[in-house]
Length: 195
Ligand code: G3H
Image 1 (spheres, rainbow, N blue to C red):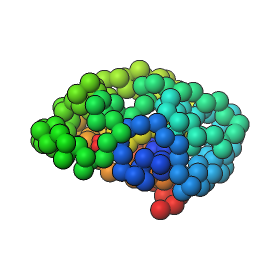
Image 2: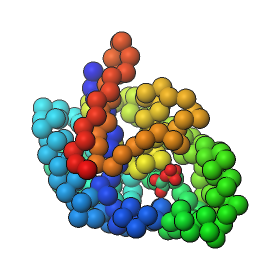
Image 3: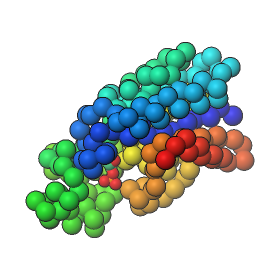
Image 4: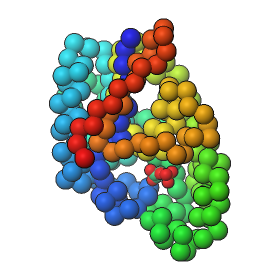
């Protein structure tokens, strides 16, 4: 069965500063991951002529995909990171200090908590529906380069993890999760390309 490869973008400048949201470029270490990922994908999908690379519309995923050559790239707004609304660009420390009530309500129910003028995990899960339908329809491999919250939701769908776990699933940087759906169920492999 065709694989689906899930990965977060290479480390971004905002990841380094601990800021959420935004649309920054990737760091030097993120650039290195982009090169390693390209290498991996080109080897792994060498004879898969119909394979495609899907990114969000944010720079950090597009830059992570950019060293990959030989496959069509598609940008999906539905793959953009959870919209943190008024908290976009803040660190968790800043949110805790300046908006303690928001911080507490999110901590209490991270799945349902919706950032003011932004999204909740449930909102993200809902907007991913067309992406999931399209992924299910694909016969060729797909590489999905997206963001932590979005990938938690996508991964949970394929790995059949319960809704309430989604916001807490570990989704490390610089790691590829390969998913294969076969008759006997879902198989998963992880490739940690760097620290
Ligand atoms: O920028 C957003 C983060 O990737 C989402 O992480 O839902 O654990 O705060 P979080």
